[in-house]
Image (cartoon, rainbow, N blue to C red):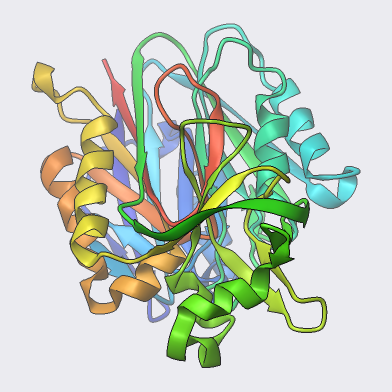
Length: 378
């Protein structure tokens, strides 16, 4: 595998040296601010440079390039595989009855023979991430790893843009299927948050909208723990996500609050919250957030054989970026230290991360995690 990276910043291109053959490039990943990637000249430049490649776009809440984090730019990673083949498929969530059907449709478009991994780039505002993941997993009995993330829009939560082989628009979901036995693909995902307060049971909810905990109004209970941060809702909710255990699972998922409704006394989350699930509040621990990034990197590949990954795709949550602020690059640097100097690193800050908990388990929607997928062609 060979890679080449470009950086579109301040309306100009910077190219990084590489031996990649542009004519043989099969895949180009573009992670950038909505303002950058929706410029037609950006797509035209990349299509001219890589005429035979599939070009996948995602808007972000921040761009990752090697050990650095940027805003208001576009990070481009072109990939030339030696033995691996790919297939890219796109659909728009508006063309389906719901997000589950969109995910189910996409995974059925991928040939199953020699399929080794599915990477997902999804719209981050029109989509129900939990339903999308359930749909993607609906025809995946052999647990082919599914990883990826939901597009971002800084901290605005307004409009996200994704696209395949076109200027990106709203509502699109793209899957990239990887084929062949010559690719080692790993994944790791971890949060690093501290839980606090009593565990409570969800007694009233509708999909990703929460109304009651232990028979009491959830928003009122939530506000009791926020102190002065109540004045800064809904933005301050990113600092206090919840931990949820669904259907008696021993694995805790993290859910981010997207909005609150004073009128309905409800909270809308970036994932479903089934009635009967158990939840606890969470708060940031800066050092643990950074350490979690190192652990996710270590989980994403086998360092014992001495082989560094060729490519690492990092998808971290916008909430982590807002909390870490000037320390944001520390979590990327922590991952880079583990992955190795020879690994090409790209990625973005998202509205949700997609990854299995462990190898051989179904994929899940995560919030507030650092999720890493590694690719090594052998």
